[in-house]
Figure 1 (spheres, rainbow, N blue to C red):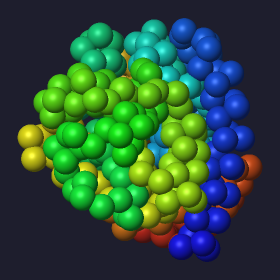
Figure 2: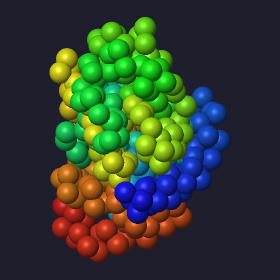
Figure 3: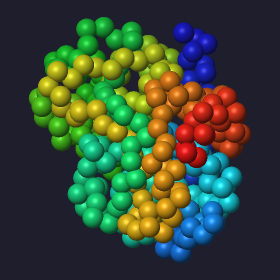
Figure 4: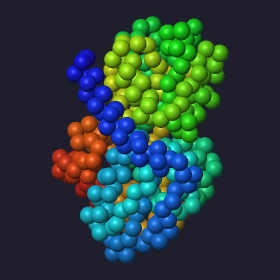
Length: 308
């Protein structure tokens, strides 16, 4: 337990460093880069602006995957790092961002697709079976489902520890799970950031205290921390969904080669787990490019699949 906890603490500390940049970017209401509107796809050239949330490591990992692939094909890649999904979807709709490489449009980000979807292209799903969860540490007894939280608020300080206020997960917990399981009179959903949630989770585990947090899969923390997902017999957390590459309207016409490569991309649980583990855990902050290089060296079949 101690070895595991120490490693997780190191990862949280590294993510906190990245979170400083996220906070700075998150203060903007819209994405600021307008390179997307000038992108061209001429003999493997042009600029592709990738938008993502660094604290959400599926987007972080796939952004660096596409940087590797596209730069090898002669494209220039720019990153637009944001702290909240709302401005990211608005950036896609405005054409300021070319591609969000790991969107959750079916359930988690459905509200943003309702607002901006007419100006967004779906290039395809690269991963199936993503889920939103509420979770507790493994040592927490007597709580196996969300329904079991009823009448036990004192154990958890009357809180469900969440992530960013604008996250789709936050909306699902606040608007669906809490009312469905009649937890509103006992619990408050505490929002802040992914980094802050993980720090609280780490602190609680270190002290063997009871805590309930919002999590999701795929996400490295769901396997790195000794936690278990709470069962959701009422389905309040939503159905499993795919992770999609979403682009600004017209992107597939402007950059058909890039759109085709993104449509070719897909990962299994095992392949994605290895990618995220390399990016977040084995290499970490400041070495993301090296992590993806190592990943493709170990998984040339994934690169071959992308390139068709």
